[in-house]
Length: 288
Image (cartoon, rainbow, N blue to C red; front, top):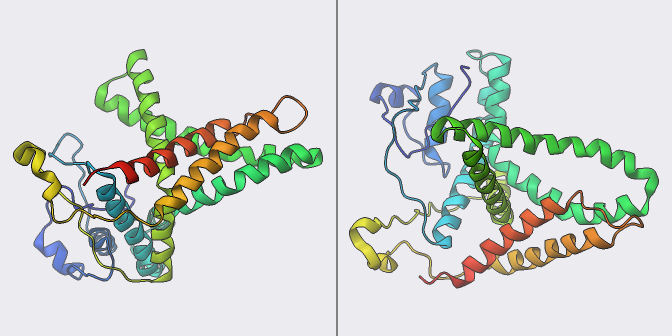
């Protein structure tokens, strides 16, 4: 309680006095709303989050729109870490726990880089684990990090239950949604990792607006939206290769070792295979 949150631009009301006192809007990051949120909270302004208030929103309906949105959000997060890290750590207005939470929050987008690195290394590690028995104890210790996924699962379940209710049927529905969400998020890990690296290195890029289609009004005319990208990202071929790579990881589960395989990483490789496959095929088949 009392830790930093960020206004994400989707819905909310700012006090003019807050904006001015925090230093006004600044355009040196791709997520200026996150930037202003932190500067305001460092000035001791408080946000009030109203869970029972809903506003209409629109998700991207084509993969190119989702890619540009994800790139901007994740690069902007890394840019804000560069910009705000020292200010948060050196602030005299907040306690240590809030500083730690604030820094980790700013590193949120860097999660994708970690997912990509762990995913790439997981297949060689699978072979090493089964070829060198004396190293198995290290892999058992490292499996502790699976707990992070369990924590995510539990936290999201509580939010889902508060919104849609509990019960066995809703829980089964939630499991399917969680698996799908995690798989597709992993499929964006290459794309988002590039954005994160650029953000941490300070490489500047233009603000690419996420296309809005308002389907209820325009119907089938959304393909004329001028903000739609017409070219396929050159990273799509790498995502296709990664799909095959993690397919090989699933196959490897059946052949490694001398005890009939090792399926500990199979669910992880399955989600990566589905995620990269989804992003790859949607990127080359979406008609714009």
